[in-house]
Length: 272
Image (cartoon, rainbow, N blue to C red):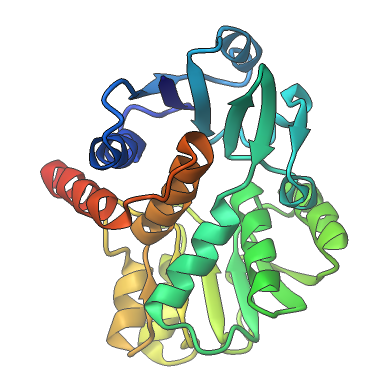
């Protein structure tokens, strides 16, 4: 059976290392997984070319929203978030799933999150929509979102309405946000450095941090939070746990998380 991760850019994705390690541990000798460069324009053709020898696809940016109109069905979480990062082929049908949300929740639980409220999310794109759903799953009903570009927040506002969440949008970098019980950064590496400065200055110390960046690590934000004594969930932990759920969806078997973690960390070390 075949599986792959699609996205653009995708060459440096850790997903092949994680999934191939899972297949080895599960004894799935005939399974393959590769990274395939694919943009929004190429997605319909790529999906059409997946025959009965394909188990599923992992999707990264910019495809998580682009795939929605190409699915035959999706779990409710996909509809609520407005993004799918997984396609499972089932009797010729394309089923959409979102494993980012449970991946975030598991990563935060693993890090030792005590209380999520209040919640501050940095960024307002597709990953921020998943962060909204994760916050809801952890018991939050309201969040503050610092948007680098409020014009990109239309999808986030719509997701919040579907999720039954209250969202307060503030400009990125605006001073005066309350110290969050949970800070989730969906911003690219370096973009959140001003929040790292605030943590170092003691003006914004989170109870717990999830930074979705996994390389380079630690980010300035993660290093500042760790120095301040806050539990930190890494982008690698998110990647690992969302991939574990993908393995379960595609293979029907429990994910060998320990083997996947070791392979992912080895791949990361090789990049340094």
